[in-house]
Image (cartoon, rainbow over all chains, first blue to last red; front, side):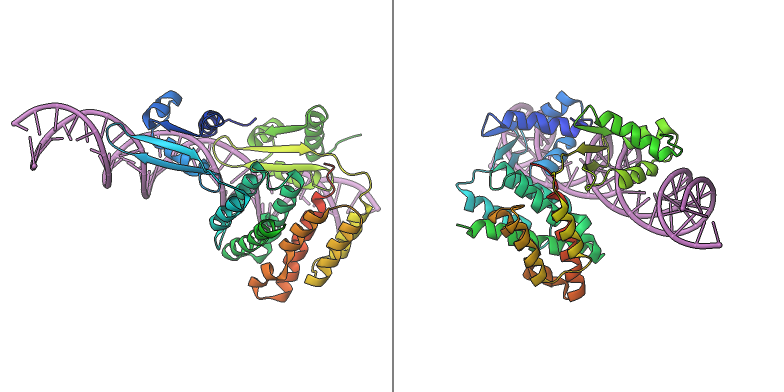
Length: 156
Length: 156
DNA sequence: ATAATAATAGTCAATATTGGTCAAAGTTGA
DNA sequence: TCAACTTTGACCAATATTGACTATTATTAT
C-alpha cells in the first residue's frame, strides 16, 4: 500500500510482531539502528500509532537494561471495550482520533464494515465543519460518538 | 471525444488507471508536474469529477510520504429513493423529520434495525443541542444525514 | 556508602515534506 | 452578455524527520 514513510514501516513491523505475541519489549536504539533513524523517531511512532484508542498500552524504563514495552490492551468483554473508548473520547475529539476509535470498534468486531462507514459518515469533518469552530466541532463529534457508543453498550 | 481542457485530460488519465485497478494512490505534485499544472488543480479535478455520488471515495494524507488515494466503489442499482430522501432533507432538518427519514430507510430495507439505531443516535437532538442554536443544529443534522445517505449508495 | 560514569529512554522545537483551501482571474459556450 | 467552468497562486494545515538537551537507572570506582 502506501508505506512511503519510515514511520509507517516501523509501525507495520511492530504490529506484525504483535499479531503473534501479546506484547513486545524493544530496545529503542536497536529499532532505531535497524531502520536507520534517530531514536526519538521511535517515540514519535509510538505516540502517534500505539495509543489507547488504538488499543495499545506502552510502558518503559530508562537506564541500563532499559526497554519499551508495547502491549495490546486486554479487554475482557465488549462492555469493557466500549467503556474504554467512551473514556478515550472525552469531551472533545478530533476528526482523526474519531476515525481511530471507529477503527478500533471494527477491529474488535463491535461493528461491521457498513456500520463503521455509517459512523464515519456521521462524524466526518465535512459534515461538522459548518459550525466554523474547531472546538465546537470536536465537542459535537464527541457527543455523537458517545451517543453511538452508549447505544452499542446498552443495546441488548 | 475532444478533451479541450486539462482537467478533462487528467480525469481521463486517472479513470483509465481505475478501469484496471480497484484504487490508485498518487502523489499530488507528481501528477501536477506530469501535466504541467499547479498542484491545486488536482484537487479541483478530484472535487468535481470523483465525487461520492459518482462512485468514488477519496482519502489523503499530508506530510512526508503523503498521498491521495482514489477508490472506485460499486453503487446500488436502484438509488432513486436515496436521491429523493437527500432532496427531502435539504439544508435543514428537524429532529422529528430526521427520525421520519430514518424510518423510511428502514421501511425500504436500506438499513436494518441496528444501523437505523446508530443513525438515530447520531442525529439525536441531545447530541446536537450543544450548539444552542436551532438553525445551526438543523443544518448540522442535515449534513450528517446526507453524508450517511450518500454512503448508503454503496453496494456492500 | 557515595560519587562518577555509562547506558538507556523522553521531550521539544526546528525543519522538511507533503496535501488543502480559497478567492481572483481567465475561458467558454449558450 | 452572462453564468458556469477552469486555471492559478498565495497562504494554510497536517504529518514526518532530526537532533540538542533532559531525565532516569544501572554499574563502576573510590
